[in-house]
Length: 357
Image 1 (spheres, rainbow, N blue to C red):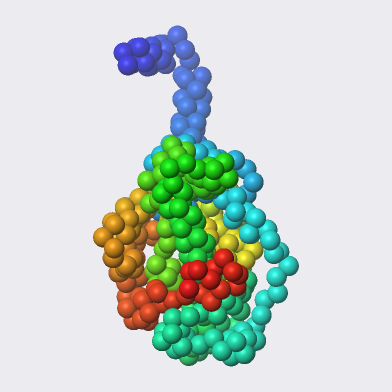
Image 2: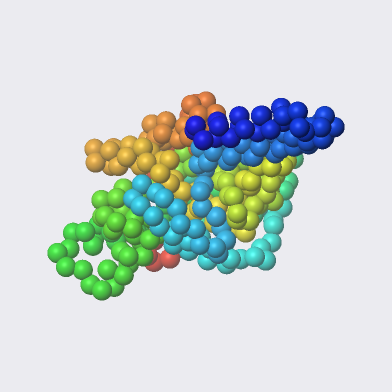
């Protein structure tokens, strides 16, 4: 500190010396003033960018990127390669790139032909395995609010149940392995794969069990409805983004109202199913939602159902509005009776899924 201070005094003395002419002093002084005013905006802009980057990270919707670059990221259990978390999402996202977008009237007819009605689902708890890859553009033009909401729920419900079924099967396999005194090589390889998929480099079974679990159907529907305006948002229509997940370097859509200097985009998917899977993987692995997973595990240990109204309280950091976001989710769940779908079952599309009915 003192050395820098002495240097400044010497510089001032140099300019104060009478040996130096007044004209050169004015010229050099002008250069210093110009440099100061030129550099200050750059410094302020850099500081502002750094501040925005920090704020964006605090939203913590999704730290991962849907591209093939490798990123090391710190999580609560250490450092891991994020591509390991997303390898199955990569494959799903690349599975169908030439999908056909059905219009709303065709989708409604499809649901009628398959006898897929929400009123029936609320009663018998069975959902037809109708998997759509894209939202209809005409959903924006459905003036009747209830009809628009029902169509959106009919589209996303099978997708959410399908991902929950995948997790149920994995969880069933995990408990089978845990209860054995010795595991086969195939079982050990499966465990290694799941440790990577759920970001558990420590290979701790307890952590894997906590992470490998479902998100309540009603909560997932409520978040999709909130993030997309019941399927009408630009991000949902153009990018199949049902949950408003962010990316800083992956493929995505730039928010129109965002500052041009902000680096984040809303993550883009080729199919709706990939968006649902990425959302669940995010909730189940990101350090921001550690308390959510802890609360879910406590409900499991007590033999209680996964209550979306309780678990929603732990998603206050999903959006910048915090607790207000939680209140909106709870309101959506209650007003639309979404908890009716929490114990719904997806009719099996394969023999392996029959055990889940």
